[in-house]
Image (cartoon, rainbow over all chains, first blue to last red; front, top):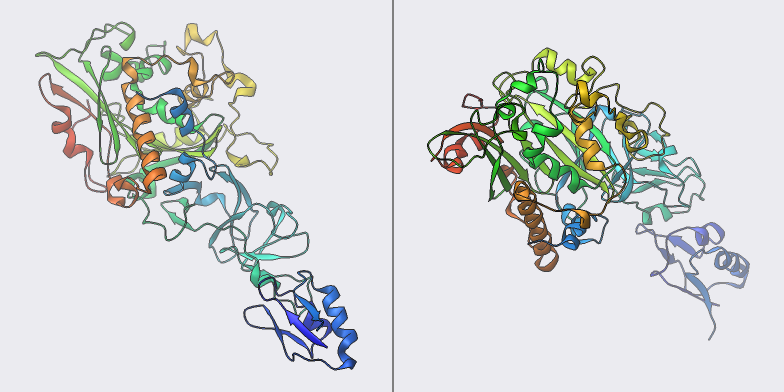
Length: 64
Length: 455
């Protein structure tokens, strides 16, 4: 599964890092950074929680 | 010529209006230093139509920030004044004096959202017991070189009060010295006011001069021209060989007025900053000072406490409403003398004490400037004694337009030394030019004596 982010709309709420700390982090600019583009199937549940809880809709799953 | 609409536009001061945007390019005196206690209750302020909250944090620094929390608009007058700034009582968000959010204790530890949140905050400076702020954008200029704000505390009395009228009405009242012989006249002849040169002289004729600081409004009266009661019965001031009594009031951009001394015994310089709270309310910052020596103890006491229950040139400690709710902007400076109680007007007093029936000097001014009810300027008819009013309006209109159309500010906006100007009263020979003869007394160094005998 491929994850996409939009740092233009991110406001650094940190929900993504809270739910999926292995996949997301928030940098010194208080904006989302992906730790890895591709994620393991094991992380999918956490990533879905992160997507659900992002108040700015700044992260999503890219379907190819 | 200036139209009613052009004049009315000067009284509309919210952000985005021509006059409001112009005013934002100047420092505003907006509170006395002692209004804010370190770590004390935040104080609601409104300036140029914008609601704000002022506070002094525990380390003594002053903040002036938006009136509501950036989260869900909870009032910051309820905020806890702690640490680096104000902490909203709704969810604990904290803001420092730059407006930056520094804490969101209800958010997860991974959140850095606070870094993206900043509320409006304006820089503040303190000088001479007065707190100033600058609502413009970018780096503010130096504070204006106003003498009353830079001399020792014992030389000056400064007062703050709210007036329920547009700022221009107040300013116009203080450059118009023709009103004093009427509005402020006393019928009991024991009053010292009845014996001033102004009260003993005749009808004024005005000479108005545009200056680099604003406008000089000079009024000349024939010495001894009034039989009694001054302007009401006096002769005309047409010069000739006789001596003339000159009073030069100053309008200093953007909202200051300076009034000359009344007599040798009362040699104080006075004036106001007429700071717009919004379109219909004005913060009247009054000052009375002797540049080179302390005010007489009795005078300072009368200003602060009133005179036998009457008001003087400044609101006394008895002149403020005791029970104003603390969510009203400038609640501490709302006066007991207001439109709702008709300024304690007493018709019977017109027969015995006050020509106006209004109890005390500043109350007389505020009553006529505020009006018994709202009356538009379209009902005015200006006359020869309003020459200073007209030129002041035109100067303001042209300054506002130059900023609106070309971004150009008058010189004084960036040259603080031009604020070093005084009002003057003097007796001159009939053929002397007041502008030449009095220039040196208008531009004395900071703290220097008047340099002349007050007539």
